[in-house]
Length: 301
Image (cartoon, rainbow, N blue to C red; front, side):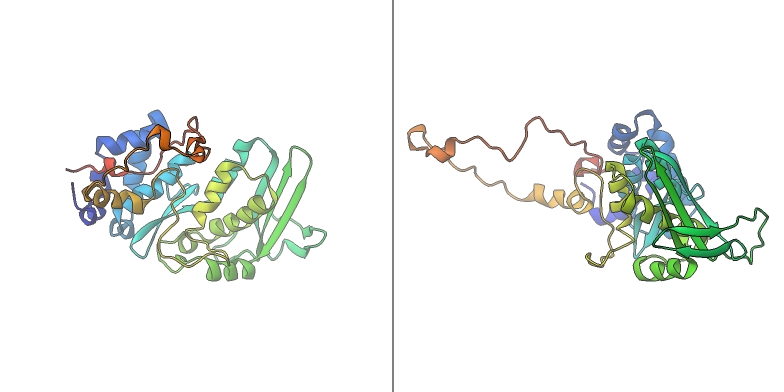
């Protein structure tokens, strides 16, 4: 079995050639797996920072995108792989949240846009009234939005509007985004996209219907955004079903430990009444799809 440290340094383009890893992604993406893995390799080849992080963390973050059926392309804005302290973090883009909300079939309207100084009048957070006069024109690079607004209307008629000033966005970034100081962070490569994502994430996760995919996407973002109740950790949260990265790397050591002898079976006449009760802690019909990498997926002997 290859050393786990060596595998962390093995290039992604080599790891994805493993039949076991290909099979794992095919189990999630079916026929789209080869194209998806190709996009992961491209994303890493285009980023020197991603080339120098734990390469297994790249694949586990990519598996999060695969489980949400979102493409990995740093230019599309659906999902990002962000290097931070030697690992690759999974980070949602604003288009990814829009995509997941659309799939729910519960949104009649959903949008978020930047607001410039000559368009903004006032904002009442209590009544959610925004004095906004759109001016459609080509903006100079020096023109910076003064805020960002998000709006949705559900199929049942419920409506919600949120507005964040630019100062609120920057304060939120500085307080909660651990990777924002990285030159490869989308906060530095595309501030407006991340600002729109922040508004949409707040809008959808706080006020919209919480689907399983949106919850999973929100959990993935917790690897970069931490709320006041969570601890600051340099490692991202693995939100894909199945074994975590730590378990993935640790199973080798577990297999090397000597097996313990099973406890002797009790004789039927010695069994107590409580011993005959059925095990209700596990549903034998329950099946959880494994989408994160396991020890068997290691591509080298």
